Image (cartoon, rainbow, N blue to C red; front, side, top):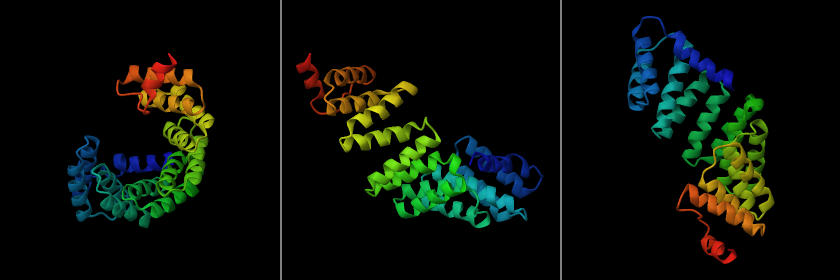
Length: 244
């Protein structure tokens, strides 16, 4: 998937160096995207597309960048239309299927999202961590918890440091009262990333479910040190006082 992303980036940097109006408008739009001025990106890329070009890669790249700007603006319906324009011209971009799938998730169109993530995984199975993660989120949001856990596990197989997958899988294990498995996921996050209060809070709750009370207290104290609103579990502060 990285190679396909780099192809799109090369389009932005190299293909439109020629001095014509469409190229100038296009380049300006990409510059605004880099500055996080997404409305301006949409304006300039739209003008570039109106001027047009005979180069098919121009349209692919222009629709991609404008779709990305729409995504940042949370105008997901417009983003979906632009990503679809890319895929009409070249249906081998796994990354575009992934982006369109994310836009579908944000519109709560989970079935369509699942289809896009599945296609992305089929196209580039060895670099599909994000697609597995997002398909897992789509499954989770439709109540398919076991399928979500399987996809989070596949995301972790693709990228061991996919911490979001560890967190979401850990929470599903916790809610399913599989506390020992939840502890493993939360511990991995704490030991291999820069953890925040919620990570310790989550593991503390799992330790409580596993009847490891002293470890729960230690984690909740750490959570409180990082953020005074924690621990968030009702009764946790009271339990700390009772045990101590």
